[in-house]
Image (cartoon, rainbow, N blue to C red):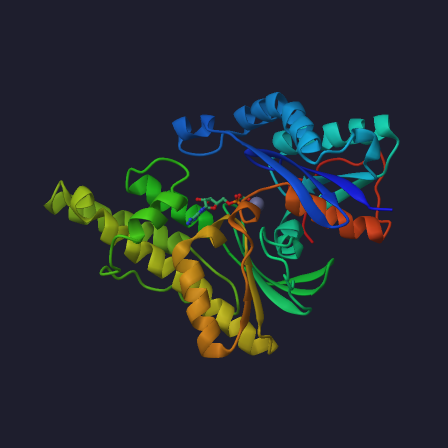
Length: 339
Ligand code: KG4
Ligand code: ZN
């Protein structure tokens, strides 16, 4: 009998629902929240209100696109954390009520582990997809996290490096704010960077081990912009593409230098990237170039499975279902959930 799982994701500002049948994603609906653009960042209270509005239609659509009936579901998997408490509460409460009403098991999923497990979703239009083989390294880079994860098995993961301050996505978004670009700025910096050259130098922070730091870069960019605009008020408008290319190049090289170090240290040649920032064209390009030089096999999820989505929750739920790893109705969200 095919195992059918409903995945629900509501950790930040995307309400998403997805259905998997025997580990294959058959629907993945993502409702984005545009309201935060007016505020330059995600406003937690607004995010949870919009989740409330979106959750039922999103789940309804995911079930209907999967061409199944809700009574065919075997389990409901949901993001327990990490994330914003009010946002998580909406998804967790709905998952609990839905599972109770259908009398099926509940499965809790760690959002960061799910980003890694997105690599086990076969990309669209690829018949012979081979997922990563264990052990592999995954650079998980999002608006809230920057981690190098040693993935020994589906749920046996170890964080071997992480940011000590800002996340890589935050570095993109905060830079965009300094440059006067709207939120979220990561995709826009990427767009402008592709039209420019990395002619401005920002120093690489010297951080021990496999850890990262991005807060110094943010300050360096702030001073760089302030000093140049003082001399030429049109500096930003005239040089936007080159500034974005320079910032992007620095963020990407900070990430890749640590990833190379980790690959050497752990003698691993299977390298994956995940999370919203893995959509970045510079990161993808440089990763492929490093792969050639170092003989790596690389894994990059489909764009739709890079940013926050419920397909990765459904796939994680599928593997947990196989392990009978269920939770009870007393489960609560955990904003600071770690592995
Ligand atoms: O994983 P995600 O969707 O949400 C979190 O869990 O944070 O990641 C969102 C982050 C934002 O910081 C956004 O600016 C960044 O990913 N991002 C990008 C790109 N697309 C999304 N950053 C750089 N280049 C991109 N193309
Ligand atoms: Zn995420």
